[in-house]
Image 1 (tube, one colour):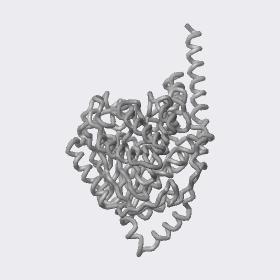
Image 2 (spheres, rainbow, N blue to C red):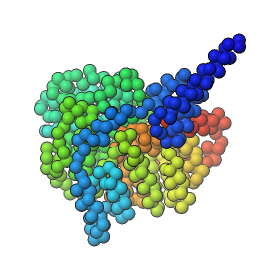
Image 3 (tube, rainbow, N blue to C red):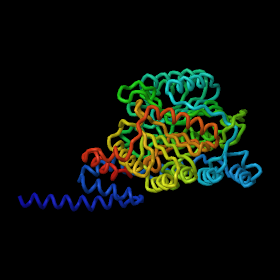
Image 4 (cartoon, rainbow, N blue to C red):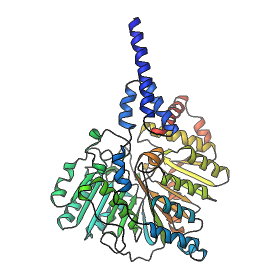
Length: 485
């Protein structure tokens, strides 16, 4: 038996040595470093299989095109808008009070130019949203650009595909980007007829399938539709039957998506072009930002919403959407209302929420009462428990599954997009959000939130304390893995 112990000790030593080499080979923040060491050391061999699937980063040559290819020239616009914001006489007519810092921050870090006079429609029901999307696509005469994390080969997915085929047959330019992991079961062959009719479709960054790519992280989590450069959609809904409440597992699917008509569409169109040119360089769109051009037609609208389209992802060291969330939280004086399917924030966001709550700000967070991913759900419960102890009102949504990613502060500033309140959206995935500076839109989102509370249960610190030790253990253990979930 002695030789068995020797072999075991050798495996443990080699595993520990391999874990150190693996984790420190790439630069990570300290929390993720310790989380991966925990997985690799406690799960010999198996931990490395998990790491190969979840932990590997994208090589620089895959990120380079996203940083540099088809970079739109926006510096002059950003500079001019900054000068306008410095003018006290005009800044109050441009954006809501207290938002100047956010506008400058996004302009400096993301080249996110401020657009004005947009018309915004908010959708919280999948059927209503897709009815509207299909109506706009049917009216398209020039181009349809679609980018989704999930484009399933199911009923609604095929409805969308057939409509896109019809438009391609009419001579309309159709381009589709989908994520191979988020669209599990959807392959290139699904789009074969669309391509035969003149349309184009490609998985994000050219990954052929989730299996051959073998990487869970660094996915294209964005959800973008742009029609003729005039109408855009962004938010939390994906293309799949479950997002219309057709899956028994989740029941009613409660999400939030917005429709933009106006110059705000330029931001979505710019983002799509960057992603398309990185994904399909052989069929790149040779177009720079120029209002009045084919892809950026002059917007003739008279709405009231000023907004910025902000994207973030592992192609940048600046976590732009997360920092935008932080600026909103830190700027709030009265209330902060958040909806997210996952609540796994890093320490900076947790500290900001805690300071706000202890400063008398009405902080509310709404999450689902049902899981879609076991470890993620338990980690969310752990952080919900922490927030409840600090006096934050935590609600579990009961009427199906809430997937909305929204935040509203003080009835003035709001955001809707694809980014969850978790590490994955902050650091690991490619995301896009609309940050809106309009009191009417903020009030509409608050009204929606208050309506959702009617279908939610407030969770108190005492309720969490009364949970079984086993449930608390699962929550605490899942929290240890939160930097890599």
